[in-house]
Length: 186
Image (cartoon, rainbow, N blue to C red; front, side):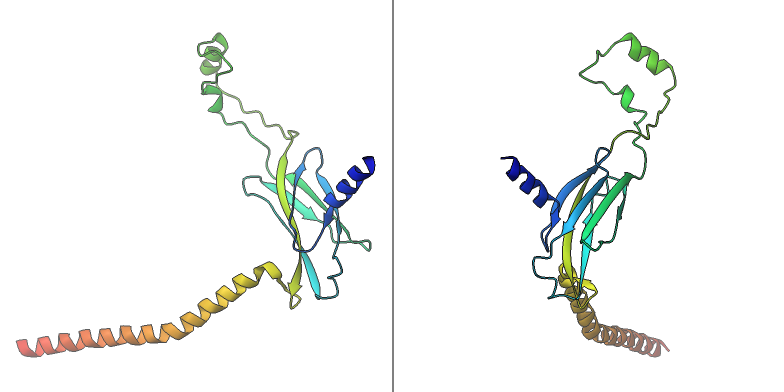
């Protein structure tokens, strides 16, 4: 049983190609270590990239150390901004405290002071993926986006000259109608 736990824990910190791994950076574990497991695919591609993404609602500075000779990387995180209590939250009713308490009346009569705790813990969910680079520079998951951009450029290149000719034709028609209208008046 203990051997199974060790194997599961070992596989938890192993990054395999195109298999996202979701974990948390927190104040208790601000640095995580991973083994890059290419699964015999390292000879098929010229390069690889490791991508880390996290929600924007968790402002965190994340740094990735490049892989060493044993193909281990480490990802560390620190909070970008301290967690601040909102000054109006103390005035909202809470089911945990009485509505008309003497401490609430005192706190409402005194100005609210904001205390910033930089040592407060943080938790940031992150998603990590190891993916191959196509042509040595484009991540494989970005290929559909690149195709869509190229298709948009092709469609714009084919349709814009026709649209410009149509606009030019309409302007010329408008000018011709205007000239004919002024000749009749004279």
